[in-house]
Length: 321
Image (cartoon, rainbow, N blue to C red; front, side, top):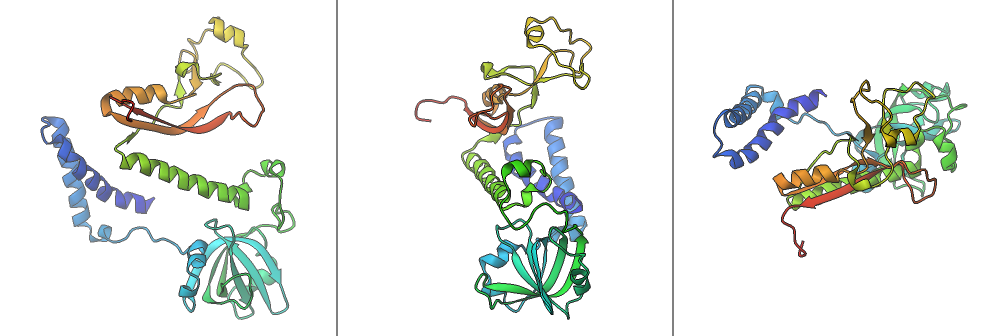
């Protein structure tokens, strides 16, 4: 958080500097406020020379090592991650450490000269443990990886009991993973899906930004049923745990929402289109990209109760668009 707060004056100044060109004809408090913010950000950066330095130090990731393995040979590096597997032998142990940046992890060799080797011998470092491994990148004699890490220091950040840790070196069904939702992102499948979703979301925003669209945050809680897109999830504080409201009573208006939180029926949104249309009539080209909810009582593979939807809206659009 400290790094983010230190970077904010520079970011705000850069954004305001770009936007001020659109406000040169503006008069009154709005323009003066923008100028003050821009100048304040500039003074804050100039007054503290430390803020001009790099405020975020990127850690070395497993994917960085695997992308260019031979370039790192001979370098001393530090890896942060979780132990996927561990194989103990008489004089040394093999740890596969994964930080979530790649499907496969990096093999670390811990011998008797490694500081912290007693953590492995004593069983404190096992499958699932969070560790920091420091060592030298060397060419691996094995055929499964190009390089490995010859550990010189092993630090335990958070332990895990290998006898009860549920993720083992085998395939787990999705039904089993639903019961351990706090750990399933560590599996290859969910981890890979998460990385793909992140890349797709970034590409989506980049595409619209490059084409002059403004990103609009549409509300998740709404009183509108956007074009009758589907059954909605009702939000209310009138119910105690276990109580339900009959659909007929809701649709007929027989329920008094005057003493409810919003004083009228409120729902989880089924679409951000209505908000996007309003903003398009002011900003020309906009899009929404956020969660939407559908309450159809269907358990088929074609129905999702929650999903993210992209909805662009263009003012003055024609068939060429």
